[in-house]
Image (cartoon, rainbow, N blue to C red):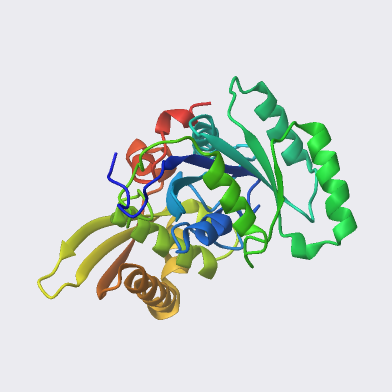
Length: 311
């Protein structure tokens, strides 16, 4: 627990809001929009959020702690199973659950499966429907989709938003701030995420790799912050290792003459400096670990439970 802003004289509210949905539904984009800073990896590729990332937003007298879970999908590998388990774990621990649905995809098989799982949860946690990417469809389609989804599940509220452009996000934020339970704030006022900086830095680098590379390679790699040195001049030296599962992937990540990893490093360093507000010296290595997908240590580094991946 932490002291709240002394300027707030009335009761304060605080709690956890879980964002669930199919991969690429816009959960990370909404989290970053709500927090007002980039705390979660956002790419055009699906299944990029691996750990439950908490972003913290202040609104009036409320502290809203968002849990950005991995997208819920049909798991095939140990990593997939651990990610889906993390998603449902984030939902079951929350004070409010938000189900994000892409407006242009509608009531897909994946959304139906998530709704069926929500029905089976032994929980009284309120679930609100958030229809995202409303700028991609016509108004009459939105109304029909809202009616169809609300017929499938008793949502307590329905919001229509564009997380990317911010449309409708103010109304959602207002409702969350009013609905969370009365409580002292759970984190310091100036904290926007509860991830260690080492993990945030690793996520930043992994995002740049995901954007740069194609096909299956991004899901066959992970990034770990091996060392973090605070320097006397106020800068930080950050040493990271990019683990790939196949020898052939190492050359792809490095690129011709090392140009790919160099470009990734420059982009990641620039974002780390913007995020932390100080100079960063970033050093990247690429190593092959053929069985990293079956190593408990790698899962711990990503904030996932290795045991959740057991078939």
